[in-house]
Length: 440
Image (cartoon, rainbow, N blue to C red; front, side, top):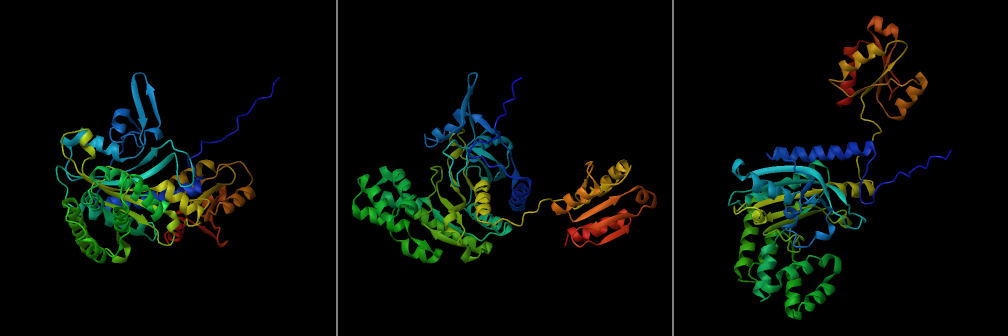
Protein backbone atom coordinates (compact mmCIF):
# COMPACT_ATOMS: atom_id res chain seq x y z
CA UNK A 1 0.00 0.00 0.00
CA UNK A 2 1.47 3.35 -1.08
CA UNK A 3 1.98 5.99 1.59
CA UNK A 4 -0.26 9.03 1.18
CA UNK A 5 1.63 11.92 -0.36
CA UNK A 6 0.99 15.06 1.65
CA UNK A 7 0.79 18.47 0.04
CA UNK A 8 3.04 21.00 1.73
CA UNK A 9 0.79 23.75 3.18
CA UNK A 10 1.79 27.16 1.86
CA UNK A 11 0.21 30.40 0.70
CA UNK A 12 0.74 32.76 -2.20
CA UNK A 13 3.25 35.54 -1.64
CA UNK A 14 1.81 39.02 -1.27
CA UNK A 15 -1.18 37.85 0.78
CA UNK A 16 -1.29 38.76 4.49
CA UNK A 17 -2.46 36.10 6.92
CA UNK A 18 -2.51 36.98 10.61
CA UNK A 19 -2.60 34.79 13.69
CA UNK A 20 -5.79 35.39 15.73
CA UNK A 21 -4.09 37.57 18.38
CA UNK A 22 -2.83 39.98 15.72
CA UNK A 23 -6.12 39.80 13.84
CA UNK A 24 -7.78 41.14 16.99
CA UNK A 25 -5.53 44.22 16.77
CA UNK A 26 -6.19 44.58 13.04
CA UNK A 27 -9.94 44.41 13.63
CA UNK A 28 -9.65 46.93 16.47
CA UNK A 29 -7.94 49.36 14.09
CA UNK A 30 -10.80 48.90 11.63
CA UNK A 31 -13.30 49.60 14.40
CA UNK A 32 -11.51 52.82 15.38
CA UNK A 33 -11.32 54.08 11.78
CA UNK A 34 -14.96 53.17 11.19
CA UNK A 35 -16.01 55.03 14.35
CA UNK A 36 -14.39 58.23 13.07
CA UNK A 37 -16.00 57.90 9.64
CA UNK A 38 -19.41 57.32 11.22
CA UNK A 39 -18.90 60.30 13.52
CA UNK A 40 -18.58 62.48 10.39
CA UNK A 41 -21.96 61.12 9.18
CA UNK A 42 -20.60 58.80 6.49
CA UNK A 43 -22.77 55.79 5.60
CA UNK A 44 -21.53 52.25 4.81
CA UNK A 45 -21.33 50.78 1.32
CA UNK A 46 -20.10 47.40 0.09
CA UNK A 47 -19.47 46.78 -3.60
CA UNK A 48 -18.62 43.44 -5.27
CA UNK A 49 -15.04 42.21 -5.46
CA UNK A 50 -15.67 41.31 -9.11
CA UNK A 51 -16.55 43.94 -11.70
CA UNK A 52 -17.04 43.86 -15.44
CA UNK A 53 -13.70 44.49 -17.15
CA UNK A 54 -15.07 47.38 -19.20
CA UNK A 55 -16.00 49.15 -15.95
CA UNK A 56 -12.64 48.80 -14.24
CA UNK A 57 -10.59 49.45 -17.37
CA UNK A 58 -12.50 52.55 -18.43
CA UNK A 59 -10.33 54.92 -16.38
CA UNK A 60 -7.09 52.96 -16.16
CA UNK A 61 -5.81 54.06 -19.55
CA UNK A 62 -3.51 51.05 -19.57
CA UNK A 63 -1.70 52.19 -16.42
CA UNK A 64 -2.53 49.16 -14.29
CA UNK A 65 -3.96 46.73 -16.86
CA UNK A 66 -0.97 44.43 -16.41
CA UNK A 67 -1.60 44.27 -12.64
CA UNK A 68 -5.25 43.22 -12.86
CA UNK A 69 -6.53 39.81 -11.93
CA UNK A 70 -8.75 39.18 -14.94
CA UNK A 71 -10.58 36.19 -16.38
CA UNK A 72 -13.44 35.28 -18.67
CA UNK A 73 -16.53 33.37 -17.53
CA UNK A 74 -18.46 32.33 -20.62
CA UNK A 75 -18.63 35.46 -22.73
CA UNK A 76 -18.18 37.81 -19.76
CA UNK A 77 -14.83 39.51 -19.13
CA UNK A 78 -14.35 40.03 -15.39
CA UNK A 79 -11.73 41.71 -13.18
CA UNK A 80 -11.10 41.77 -9.45
CA UNK A 81 -11.31 45.33 -8.18
CA UNK A 82 -7.94 47.07 -7.79
CA UNK A 83 -9.30 49.86 -5.57
CA UNK A 84 -12.61 50.99 -4.06
CA UNK A 85 -12.90 54.31 -5.88
CA UNK A 86 -13.79 53.11 -9.37
CA UNK A 87 -16.54 50.79 -8.02
CA UNK A 88 -17.85 53.81 -6.08
CA UNK A 89 -18.04 55.84 -9.29
CA UNK A 90 -19.94 53.00 -10.97
CA UNK A 91 -22.32 52.70 -8.01
CA UNK A 92 -23.09 56.42 -7.89
CA UNK A 93 -23.63 56.57 -11.66
CA UNK A 94 -26.04 53.60 -11.47
CA UNK A 95 -27.97 54.82 -8.44
CA UNK A 96 -27.83 58.59 -8.92
CA UNK A 97 -31.64 59.14 -8.96
CA UNK A 98 -32.07 57.35 -5.60
CA UNK A 99 -29.22 59.01 -3.71
CA UNK A 100 -29.21 62.16 -1.63
CA UNK A 101 -26.30 64.54 -2.13
CA UNK A 102 -23.71 65.19 -1.02
CA UNK A 103 -23.42 61.41 -0.84
CA UNK A 104 -21.01 60.42 1.95
CA UNK A 105 -19.95 56.80 2.07
CA UNK A 106 -17.27 54.72 3.72
CA UNK A 107 -16.13 51.28 2.61
CA UNK A 108 -13.75 48.74 4.08
CA UNK A 109 -12.77 45.96 1.73
CA UNK A 110 -10.08 43.98 0.02
CA UNK A 111 -8.61 45.00 -3.32
CA UNK A 112 -6.31 43.05 -5.60
CA UNK A 113 -3.31 43.89 -7.76
CA UNK A 114 -1.21 41.24 -9.47
CA UNK A 115 2.07 43.07 -9.08
CA UNK A 116 5.36 41.61 -7.91
CA UNK A 117 5.13 41.00 -4.17
CA UNK A 118 7.78 43.00 -2.31
CA UNK A 119 8.30 44.98 0.89
CA UNK A 120 5.27 47.17 1.56
CA UNK A 121 3.37 45.89 -1.48
CA UNK A 122 0.67 43.28 -1.33
CA UNK A 123 -1.41 41.51 -3.93
CA UNK A 124 -4.38 41.47 -1.59
CA UNK A 125 -4.88 44.41 0.75
CA UNK A 126 -7.57 46.03 2.87
CA UNK A 127 -8.53 49.61 2.00
CA UNK A 128 -10.40 51.89 4.41
CA UNK A 129 -12.00 54.54 2.20
CA UNK A 130 -14.34 57.46 2.77
CA UNK A 131 -15.63 59.70 -0.03
CA UNK A 132 -17.98 62.61 -0.54
CA UNK A 133 -19.71 62.87 -3.92
CA UNK A 134 -21.62 65.95 -5.03
CA UNK A 135 -24.39 66.45 -7.56
CA UNK A 136 -23.03 68.84 -10.21
CA UNK A 137 -21.09 70.80 -7.58
CA UNK A 138 -19.13 69.96 -4.44
CA UNK A 139 -17.94 72.86 -2.25
CA UNK A 140 -14.26 72.92 -1.32
CA UNK A 141 -15.15 72.58 2.35
CA UNK A 142 -15.68 68.87 1.57
CA UNK A 143 -11.93 68.63 0.86
CA UNK A 144 -11.18 70.21 4.23
CA UNK A 145 -13.61 67.85 5.94
CA UNK A 146 -11.75 64.85 4.51
CA UNK A 147 -8.36 66.23 5.58
CA UNK A 148 -9.64 66.94 9.08
CA UNK A 149 -11.27 63.52 9.31
CA UNK A 150 -8.05 61.80 8.22
CA UNK A 151 -6.20 63.59 11.02
CA UNK A 152 -8.83 62.43 13.50
CA UNK A 153 -8.41 58.85 12.28
CA UNK A 154 -4.73 58.84 13.18
CA UNK A 155 -5.48 60.42 16.55
CA UNK A 156 -7.85 57.51 17.18
CA UNK A 157 -5.10 55.09 16.16
CA UNK A 158 -2.65 56.93 18.47
CA UNK A 159 -0.26 57.52 15.58
CA UNK A 160 1.54 60.82 15.05
CA UNK A 161 1.27 62.09 11.47
CA UNK A 162 1.73 65.27 9.45
CA UNK A 163 -0.66 65.82 6.55
CA UNK A 164 1.08 67.06 3.40
CA UNK A 165 -1.34 68.99 1.21
CA UNK A 166 -1.19 70.42 -2.30
CA UNK A 167 -3.30 71.16 -5.37
CA UNK A 168 -2.55 69.59 -8.75
CA UNK A 169 -3.63 72.77 -10.54
CA UNK A 170 -0.43 74.43 -9.31
CA UNK A 171 1.94 72.25 -11.32
CA UNK A 172 -0.54 71.80 -14.20
CA UNK A 173 -0.90 75.55 -14.50
CA UNK A 174 2.80 76.23 -14.15
CA UNK A 175 3.62 73.72 -16.90
CA UNK A 176 1.09 75.51 -19.13
CA UNK A 177 2.65 78.87 -18.19
CA UNK A 178 6.03 77.52 -19.35
CA UNK A 179 4.48 76.46 -22.67
CA UNK A 180 4.60 72.76 -21.85
CA UNK A 181 0.86 72.04 -21.90
CA UNK A 182 1.31 69.04 -24.21
CA UNK A 183 3.66 67.39 -21.71
CA UNK A 184 1.86 68.01 -18.41
CA UNK A 185 1.00 64.36 -17.68
CA UNK A 186 4.55 63.19 -18.44
CA UNK A 187 5.96 66.05 -16.37
CA UNK A 188 3.84 65.24 -13.34
CA UNK A 189 4.81 61.57 -13.54
CA UNK A 190 8.48 62.59 -13.30
CA UNK A 191 7.93 65.20 -10.57
CA UNK A 192 5.94 62.68 -8.54
CA UNK A 193 9.08 60.51 -8.36
CA UNK A 194 11.49 63.24 -7.30
CA UNK A 195 11.64 61.96 -3.71
CA UNK A 196 12.79 58.56 -4.98
CA UNK A 197 15.05 59.48 -7.88
CA UNK A 198 16.46 62.80 -6.62
CA UNK A 199 16.62 66.28 -8.10
CA UNK A 200 19.42 65.63 -10.63
CA UNK A 201 17.78 62.52 -12.07
CA UNK A 202 14.44 64.33 -12.26
CA UNK A 203 16.06 67.13 -14.25
CA UNK A 204 17.59 64.54 -16.55
CA UNK A 205 14.20 62.90 -17.11
CA UNK A 206 12.61 66.28 -17.88
CA UNK A 207 15.36 67.11 -20.35
CA UNK A 208 14.65 63.81 -22.15
CA UNK A 209 11.19 65.22 -22.83
CA UNK A 210 12.82 68.14 -24.62
CA UNK A 211 12.49 70.58 -21.72
CA UNK A 212 15.42 72.98 -21.43
CA UNK A 213 17.50 73.30 -18.28
CA UNK A 214 15.97 76.61 -17.16
CA UNK A 215 12.38 75.37 -17.32
CA UNK A 216 13.32 72.04 -15.74
CA UNK A 217 14.91 73.81 -12.78
CA UNK A 218 11.88 76.08 -12.38
CA UNK A 219 9.59 73.05 -12.28
CA UNK A 220 11.83 71.29 -9.75
CA UNK A 221 12.09 74.40 -7.57
CA UNK A 222 8.31 74.78 -7.41
CA UNK A 223 7.83 71.08 -6.70
CA UNK A 224 10.20 71.25 -3.73
CA UNK A 225 8.36 74.20 -2.13
CA UNK A 226 7.14 73.04 1.29
CA UNK A 227 6.31 74.47 4.69
CA UNK A 228 3.82 76.64 6.52
CA UNK A 229 0.77 77.37 4.34
CA UNK A 230 0.96 81.15 4.62
CA UNK A 231 4.71 81.25 4.04
CA UNK A 232 4.73 78.97 0.98
CA UNK A 233 1.69 80.65 -0.56
CA UNK A 234 3.41 84.02 -0.23
CA UNK A 235 6.47 82.59 -2.00
CA UNK A 236 4.65 81.02 -4.96
CA UNK A 237 1.50 83.11 -5.37
CA UNK A 238 2.87 85.42 -8.07
CA UNK A 239 5.03 82.95 -9.99
CA UNK A 240 2.46 82.69 -12.78
CA UNK A 241 -0.59 84.47 -14.15
CA UNK A 242 -1.89 81.25 -15.73
CA UNK A 243 -5.61 80.75 -14.95
CA UNK A 244 -5.20 77.13 -13.89
CA UNK A 245 -2.32 78.13 -11.62
CA UNK A 246 -4.35 80.98 -10.11
CA UNK A 247 -7.24 78.55 -9.53
CA UNK A 248 -4.90 76.26 -7.60
CA UNK A 249 -3.67 79.15 -5.43
CA UNK A 250 -7.23 80.30 -4.72
CA UNK A 251 -8.33 76.79 -3.77
CA UNK A 252 -5.38 76.34 -1.43
CA UNK A 253 -6.21 79.63 0.30
CA UNK A 254 -9.85 78.63 0.70
CA UNK A 255 -8.90 75.17 1.95
CA UNK A 256 -6.53 76.70 4.50
CA UNK A 257 -9.30 78.96 5.80
CA UNK A 258 -11.54 75.94 6.43
CA UNK A 259 -8.79 73.95 8.12
CA UNK A 260 -8.19 76.92 10.40
CA UNK A 261 -11.90 77.08 11.25
CA UNK A 262 -11.86 73.37 12.09
CA UNK A 263 -9.19 74.22 14.63
CA UNK A 264 -6.72 71.80 13.09
CA UNK A 265 -3.32 72.20 14.75
CA UNK A 266 -1.06 74.01 12.26
CA UNK A 267 1.80 71.71 13.25
CA UNK A 268 -0.23 68.75 11.97
CA UNK A 269 -0.33 69.82 8.31
CA UNK A 270 1.95 71.43 5.77
CA UNK A 271 1.74 72.80 2.24
CA UNK A 272 3.85 70.52 0.05
CA UNK A 273 3.70 71.20 -3.70
CA UNK A 274 5.51 67.89 -4.32
CA UNK A 275 2.37 65.96 -3.33
CA UNK A 276 1.03 64.97 -6.76
CA UNK A 277 -0.35 61.43 -6.38
CA UNK A 278 -0.02 59.09 -9.30
CA UNK A 279 -3.67 58.60 -10.23
CA UNK A 280 -4.61 60.92 -13.06
CA UNK A 281 -8.22 61.16 -11.89
CA UNK A 282 -7.19 63.69 -9.22
CA UNK A 283 -8.06 67.19 -10.39
CA UNK A 284 -7.44 69.57 -7.48
CA UNK A 285 -6.70 69.06 -3.79
CA UNK A 286 -4.35 66.18 -3.02
CA UNK A 287 -2.93 65.10 0.32
CA UNK A 288 -0.84 62.39 1.94
CA UNK A 289 -0.11 61.55 5.58
CA UNK A 290 3.43 60.84 6.76
CA UNK A 291 4.72 59.78 10.16
CA UNK A 292 7.49 62.30 11.01
CA UNK A 293 9.33 59.87 13.29
CA UNK A 294 9.31 57.25 10.54
CA UNK A 295 9.86 58.92 7.16
CA UNK A 296 11.00 55.56 5.80
CA UNK A 297 7.37 54.40 5.99
CA UNK A 298 6.39 56.75 3.19
CA UNK A 299 2.76 57.78 2.83
CA UNK A 300 0.34 56.01 5.21
CA UNK A 301 -2.82 57.67 3.90
CA UNK A 302 -3.76 59.58 0.79
CA UNK A 303 -6.61 61.20 -1.03
CA UNK A 304 -7.85 64.14 -2.98
CA UNK A 305 -10.41 65.74 -5.27
CA UNK A 306 -11.62 64.05 -8.46
CA UNK A 307 -14.13 66.02 -10.52
CA UNK A 308 -14.50 63.73 -13.53
CA UNK A 309 -14.23 60.11 -12.37
CA UNK A 310 -17.90 59.16 -12.94
CA UNK A 311 -17.82 60.71 -16.41
CA UNK A 312 -17.06 57.32 -17.95
CA UNK A 313 -20.40 55.95 -16.74
CA UNK A 314 -22.83 58.88 -16.83
CA UNK A 315 -23.42 62.30 -18.38
CA UNK A 316 -24.13 63.64 -14.90
CA UNK A 317 -21.39 65.73 -13.33
CA UNK A 318 -20.59 64.01 -10.02
CA UNK A 319 -17.46 65.54 -8.46
CA UNK A 320 -15.95 63.85 -5.43
CA UNK A 321 -13.24 63.94 -2.80
CA UNK A 322 -12.04 61.16 -0.56
CA UNK A 323 -9.40 59.52 1.58
CA UNK A 324 -7.95 56.04 1.49
CA UNK A 325 -5.93 54.19 4.12
CA UNK A 326 -4.11 51.05 3.04
CA UNK A 327 -4.55 49.25 6.34
CA UNK A 328 -2.73 46.06 5.32
CA UNK A 329 0.42 48.00 4.49
CA UNK A 330 0.14 50.23 7.58
CA UNK A 331 -0.36 47.25 9.88
CA UNK A 332 2.59 45.44 8.32
CA UNK A 333 4.83 48.47 8.90
CA UNK A 334 3.75 48.79 12.53
CA UNK A 335 4.18 45.06 13.09
CA UNK A 336 7.66 44.88 11.58
CA UNK A 337 8.77 47.88 13.66
CA UNK A 338 7.34 46.59 16.95
CA UNK A 339 4.82 49.42 17.10
CA UNK A 340 1.64 47.38 17.58
CA UNK A 341 -0.25 47.54 20.88
CA UNK A 342 0.42 44.75 23.35
CA UNK A 343 -0.69 41.45 21.87
CA UNK A 344 -2.76 39.30 24.20
CA UNK A 345 -3.10 35.57 23.48
CA UNK A 346 -6.83 35.80 24.24
CA UNK A 347 -9.69 38.30 24.43
CA UNK A 348 -11.60 36.12 26.91
CA UNK A 349 -12.77 37.60 30.23
CA UNK A 350 -13.86 34.35 31.85
CA UNK A 351 -13.43 30.63 31.26
CA UNK A 352 -15.77 28.13 32.90
CA UNK A 353 -14.23 24.77 33.85
CA UNK A 354 -16.72 21.96 34.60
CA UNK A 355 -15.89 19.45 37.33
CA UNK A 356 -17.76 16.13 37.42
CA UNK A 357 -21.18 15.88 35.78
CA UNK A 358 -21.89 19.61 35.57
CA UNK A 359 -21.58 20.31 31.83
CA UNK A 360 -25.26 21.13 31.28
CA UNK A 361 -25.29 23.55 34.21
CA UNK A 362 -22.10 25.13 32.90
CA UNK A 363 -23.79 25.72 29.53
CA UNK A 364 -26.53 27.63 31.39
CA UNK A 365 -23.88 29.67 33.23
CA UNK A 366 -22.16 30.52 29.97
CA UNK A 367 -25.51 31.72 28.55
CA UNK A 368 -25.85 33.98 31.61
CA UNK A 369 -22.35 35.49 31.38
CA UNK A 370 -21.97 35.90 27.62
CA UNK A 371 -24.53 38.70 27.45
CA UNK A 372 -22.21 40.91 29.47
CA UNK A 373 -18.66 39.60 29.00
CA UNK A 374 -16.62 37.33 26.73
CA UNK A 375 -17.08 33.90 28.27
CA UNK A 376 -15.73 30.54 27.12
CA UNK A 377 -16.77 27.07 28.28
CA UNK A 378 -13.84 24.65 28.45
CA UNK A 379 -15.39 21.32 27.48
CA UNK A 380 -12.05 19.73 26.66
CA UNK A 381 -11.55 16.31 28.25
CA UNK A 382 -8.07 16.99 29.61
CA UNK A 383 -7.30 17.06 33.30
CA UNK A 384 -8.20 19.98 35.55
CA UNK A 385 -4.50 20.76 35.99
CA UNK A 386 -3.95 20.87 32.22
CA UNK A 387 -6.94 23.18 31.77
CA UNK A 388 -5.69 25.60 34.41
CA UNK A 389 -2.23 25.58 32.88
CA UNK A 390 -3.69 26.37 29.45
CA UNK A 391 -5.85 29.20 30.85
CA UNK A 392 -2.77 30.71 32.45
CA UNK A 393 -0.82 30.42 29.20
CA UNK A 394 -3.60 32.22 27.32
CA UNK A 395 -3.66 34.96 29.97
CA UNK A 396 -7.35 34.47 30.70
CA UNK A 397 -7.91 36.72 33.74
CA UNK A 398 -10.66 34.72 35.48
CA UNK A 399 -11.60 31.05 35.75
CA UNK A 400 -14.88 29.77 37.20
CA UNK A 401 -14.59 26.28 38.67
CA UNK A 402 -17.96 24.55 38.69
CA UNK A 403 -18.46 21.28 40.58
CA UNK A 404 -21.58 19.56 41.87
CA UNK A 405 -21.31 21.24 45.29
CA UNK A 406 -21.16 24.66 43.63
CA UNK A 407 -24.29 23.89 41.63
CA UNK A 408 -26.18 22.87 44.80
CA UNK A 409 -25.04 25.88 46.86
CA UNK A 410 -25.18 28.50 44.11
CA UNK A 411 -21.73 29.69 45.22
CA UNK A 412 -18.95 29.29 42.70
CA UNK A 413 -15.16 29.25 42.92
CA UNK A 414 -13.96 32.27 40.92
CA UNK A 415 -10.18 32.47 40.61
CA UNK A 416 -8.29 35.59 39.58
CA UNK A 417 -5.49 34.12 37.47
CA UNK A 418 -3.42 37.29 37.73
CA UNK A 419 -3.36 37.57 41.55
CA UNK A 420 -4.19 34.00 42.57
CA UNK A 421 -7.05 35.27 44.73
CA UNK A 422 -10.10 32.99 44.89
CA UNK A 423 -13.70 33.82 45.80
CA UNK A 424 -16.70 31.63 46.66
CA UNK A 425 -19.58 33.79 45.51
CA UNK A 426 -22.80 33.91 43.49
CA UNK A 427 -22.82 34.21 39.72
CA UNK A 428 -24.09 37.80 40.05
CA UNK A 429 -21.15 38.74 42.26
CA UNK A 430 -18.79 36.95 39.84
CA UNK A 431 -20.09 39.09 36.99
CA UNK A 432 -19.65 42.31 38.92
CA UNK A 433 -16.04 41.51 39.83
CA UNK A 434 -15.15 40.53 36.25
CA UNK A 435 -16.83 43.59 34.71
CA UNK A 436 -15.08 45.89 37.17
CA UNK A 437 -11.72 44.34 36.21
CA UNK A 438 -12.42 44.39 32.45
CA UNK A 439 -13.43 48.05 32.32
CA UNK A 440 -10.53 49.40 34.38
